[in-house]
Length: 357
Image (cartoon, rainbow, N blue to C red):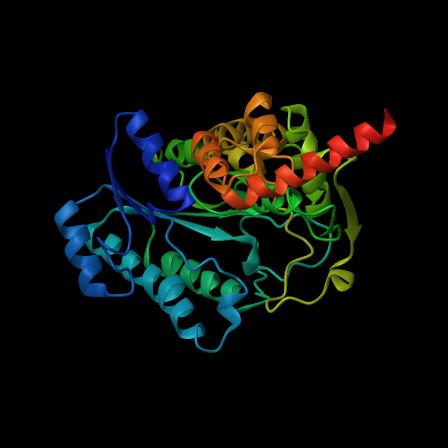
C-alpha cells in the first residue's frame, strides 16, 4: 500500500513513516518543503504525482498558546482548517481514504465523564481547538472513507513534549510545581503509529479516540512518574533529595494565554469493539521512552553535568586552566558552562568533606 504522511518532521509523522516501512508499505513523508497544505495547488500537484491509496494527515499547528496571538490566528486557521480541507478535497477527487489526527480540545474540557468518539457536543476552549474542529468537519463533510482519531498528551522522540520539558527543568531547579486538576492520559507516538497503521489496513472508518492505557492521571501524577522512572534508570539527580515536585491547581499555577481542558479523558472502547488492539499502558510507554531518550541524549545528570566517568569529573574539578577545562569539555561532550558549574560544586563538596574530617 502506498501512503502519504503529512508532518513527517513531527513526533507522530516520523513514527508513522517508520511503522509503515517496517510493514513493507510504501511511505511518502512530506512536510512544508514538499507540500504546502495551505495551498490547494501544492496539495493537488503532490497528491496527483504520488497517487497514494491513503493519506495520514499528521501535520498541524500545535503551539496552543501562540495560536491565541492575533498575528497568528489566521495562520492557525489556514494550517489546521484550510489545509485539512485541501487534503480532504483531493482525497475525494482521488477516491482515497483519509486519516485525520485530531484532539480532545474540540470539546469543552469540563466534567469528569470520558468523551466518547461519536459525541457531537463540540465547544472548543481556544483558537487551536476551534481550528482542529474545523478540520474535523471538513473531513467528515467531504468524505465517506475517513478516520478521525483524537489523541491527547502526546510524546515522541522527534520533537518537544512534556517529558523532555520536565527532564530539562528538573535538572536545573530544586522545586517544581505542576498542575493536578487537569486529567487525561498520555499518548506515545511510537505505540500510536502501530495502531494507526492497523486502522488504515481496514475499512472500519469513523471517529476514534486513542491514548495509552493505564488509567487517568493529572499532569502532576505524570511528572512524578517521569522523575521516579528516571531515578529507577540511574539518574539520582531527580530523586527527592535533589528535587521536590508540588501539586498546584490551575488557578494557583496562573492563567495561560489559551484555556486548557480540565477533562481530557477519552473513551476508547470503540477501538476494541472494532477489533483493534489497545495501546500499552502509559507506564510501560514511559519506561521505554525514557530508556530511549536518555540513551540518545547521553543524558545530563547532577544539574546539567554530562554522565561522564567519575575520574574525568574529578580531573575537571582539580583543573584551573580554561584551556585544560575546554579539553575536557571536548572529551566528555559537556558544555563549558556545565563543566565550570560542576567544578565549583565539587570543590564545595571537597571542602565540606575536609571540614567533617
